[in-house]
Length: 141
Image 1 (cartoon, one colour):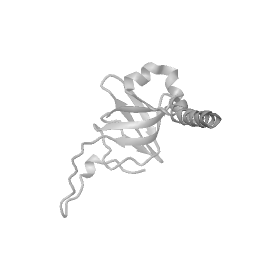
Image 2 (cartoon, rainbow, N blue to C red):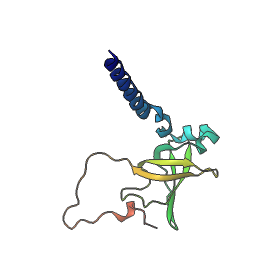
Image 3 (cartoon, one colour):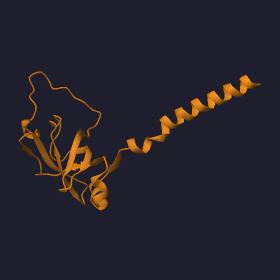
């Protein structure tokens, strides 16, 4: 009987530890997805949170400058300035959907640690001799 009780307690302890590891610190690792309107509405709370900001790259807002790129992300209602030191993906351009992960700076500029471009699943390889349209690309800093 003591062996069954001991085995039961060991199993209970293992389940408890696994439960804590799986669910105990989940809230610290969550990254919320916000629109520009939600980010602006959050005010100072947004400065401490790591979030994913999603929207469209605003026309005329992309500027490649010394070691980084700045642009505005809009949801049609609000716009948020974004600064990233990453080299944007080749598909990055004005009018395309993006998701940027980072935090809101005290200066009102979203500092991106990760830049992802939204695109459909249809890929067409360039034909032999076909060159990409350079007018849709941003020069790397």
